Amino acid sequence: MSINETKPNTRRKLGLMGGTFDPVHNGHLLIANEAGWRLELDAVLFIPTGDPPHKQNLNITPARRRLEMVRLATQDNPLFEVSPIEIERPGLSYTAQTLQALHEDYGEETDFYFIIGVDAAAELLSWNEPDQVVTLAKLVVVNRPGFDLPLAKLQAGLPQIDLNEHLILLDVPLVEISSTEIRHRVSQHISIRYLLPEEVIAYIEREKIYLPQAALPVADGEAQIHAH
Ligand code: ATP
Ligand code: MG
Image (cartoon, rainbow, N blue to C red; front, side):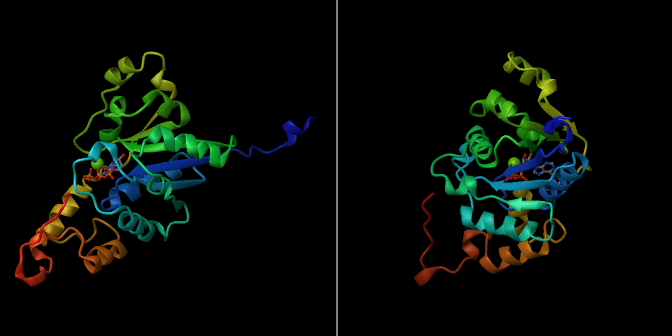
């Protein structure tokens, strides 16, 4: 018997959960946990994006705060890990580049499962090197209220790839929570309880994130001026 026949399967299955996480919420945590259990992943790595190319003109919370919120939200789940890889890399965050770096870090024994909502998957063709993205990781597409996957359009845009081999469609309980809604609620002083972990809510309150600018203390009675 050769060594290969007796050796147990040592391949590691690693889920990747990328996002702006501004802030992280229970929708993110639920889909990551569902994918972890259903696909029998060894871990799910949360990767907050550093400088998101598709949100260039928007006002995004500093990366270190988004990272801290993800740390607080994930610390009680042994399946979850957090990586600052995109935050620490200078320049724009491209998923293809991140996957390449992770392959180098984790080696050939690891298979990657990139977990994304159907809204994000629908934009795949606008990403940098989408063919590389689906080749370097299996794309685990989860449903999200209000969005459908334009599979035929995606397949037409990637003619050299059989998407059926690279996509896993995973049905998860629909959760109608978004970071946009949470930011809006905080700015309007509406409760966000049960939409995200209590530790993250406490952090948002303590650091006064997402409040309307007028609610922040203003020096010398002057209107605050912000450079965006
Ligand atoms: P924003 O409103 O600022 O865009 P978001 O709630 O969409 O925030 P992101 O950080 O943009 O959160 O999303 C990260 C990933 O999580 C994406 O792949 C997105 O599709 C997925 N996702 C976020 N919320 C949900 C949800 N409620 N159900 C399913 N997938 C979700
Ligand atoms: Mg989003």
